[in-house]
Amino acid sequence: MTQSAVLALVKDLIARPSVTPEDAGCQTALAERLAASGFVADTLAEGGVTNLWLRRGTAQPVLVFAGHTDVVPTGPLEKWTSPPFTPTERDGRLYGRGAADMKSSIAAFTIAAEEFVARHPDHAGSIAMLITSDEEGPAVHGTVKVCEALLARGEKLDYCIVGEPTSGKALGDVIKNGRRGSLSGKLTVRGIQGHVAYPQLARNPVHQVVPALAELTVREWDAGNEYFPPTTFQISNFHAGTGATNVVPGEAVIDFNFRFSTASTPEGLKDAVTQTLDRHGLEYDIAWTLGGEPFLTPRGSLSEALSSAIQDETGVTTELSTTGGTSDGRFIARICPQVVEFGPCNATIHQVNENIEVADLEPLKNIYRRTLENLLLPR
Image (tube, rainbow, N blue to C red; front, side, top):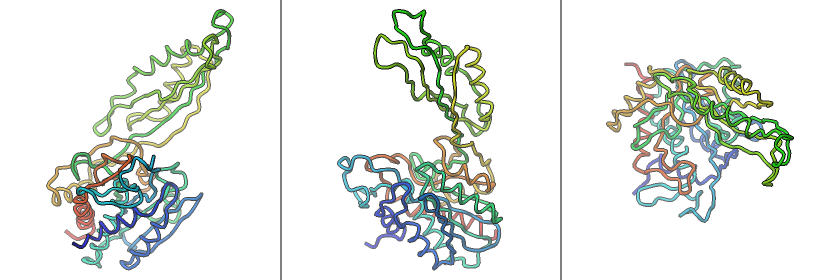
């Protein structure tokens, strides 16, 4: 039995060991393939990262498919049932690093675009693709740089579908129409090191900071809103002491993170933390890292077109969600008014023996194609 075009392409992409920030030739293969359908390629390389901007057409509206060719490291090779960069079908599933996150989506929207253009060569608007090899890494030289370049040359985007694996129990059951922001802090509380037998000569930073941390962990930061759950605060690391049992530590270092909704701002969260620490009389420093601002696309023409495509292809009624970590959608949302994420089931992403249901590949491709039809064909 001849394999489908989307299955053949995803196998080709999985076979390329593109561990972040490597692309391993994936983007070149995509550009060469899509040239036959009229896509013009623009490669932007920076800081060891390869980025690809593909566009067919010059008119509005512009519908962008976005994704990443880089994958996370494999983990212990001996724990894989089959080699991670040898795409392997087994019991109706396709195994390989990147199978779900997110080479299947890239293959699916590539073939969807080819089919759509073949059927509708004179379609309205433009189709574009934004592909990076720096999504699983620091995300410093990837999608954000492409967005800056597009903004500088005045390219206006209207819709963007990021092919992240969003589905839960069944293909199409979840569309991400936003993501929470991520704000991290490294708190260093200074005390005075000393002998535990002479506490009056020391100042224990652990004892000092614990009441403040207890207050921060139970605080209600906001109530969330229609699209977002309430903001959360979590301590991820707490380090203090020399390892000896008879020494009061001289400092305590605490790592913490906020996942915050559009109901809060980074500035407001920072102010609340420092006010709490000041009230407890601590001597401290904080180094802040803003991993990403929250973004949100309210219900509108893009989510409706995609939801309709999912319903028509699978019969599944989709749910809009903003759960999960950050994504490159946070960068694209700065220059594009409607950004959503949609892709295959995410149960095995970043795991050993990452895999996808082979039977989901053709419907995934068809959903992307139907969305193109819903947005770029006259009604």
